[in-house]
Length: 260
Image (cartoon, rainbow, N blue to C red; front, top):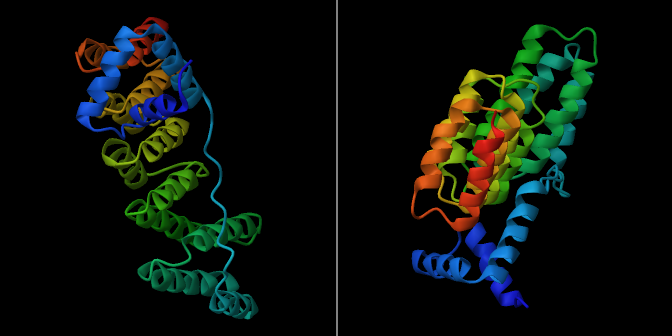
């Protein structure tokens, strides 16, 4: 029977939250203890196959100034242009204060739905909305709180297309973010745009940058999903590394064989 404390240790190991010494101890235990190794495999499967990302909830505290601005803009003769200008100005102020990030996403999402269904919307307004939305994502990705960065990555998953600026930001997040959950969410968002050569290339190159078992497994599964033959070599290199843990090695071996 595996104790709850040991299960917590295994989870922390998966998440890359242990010290080097603690990680080495767990690695040695996994090599010696088949029961513990089976438990770890089940835990890794659950984490890599379960979709845990949910849409971020908007803030419950709405700023009255925003609704005043919204109502005034709708009353204008040219509501779309006026609202866009006011929206950008308002969001610049609240972002500077690090307030109301969730509200910002809610408003942009609702606004897009409204204007995109309006036959009179012009391409300039659409471009402006896209720019505002992208700037919000880029700003949140730089926030120190992991939940804000996760919120940004989740928002990208709603995009129908992404430009080089967003792809670059997501790949930077995948390679450098300190939180495994954010990195995995970045993979899930990027894979939606896998037809983009820049995205595929970035995902493949990221394999060699990852040290977290959970992220390594996620990328291996992604390469199988995409049937990306160019990923075989970096996956093999990761497999050959002595420090790669036993469970990840098993998964890498299977993944390489499954890429036809």
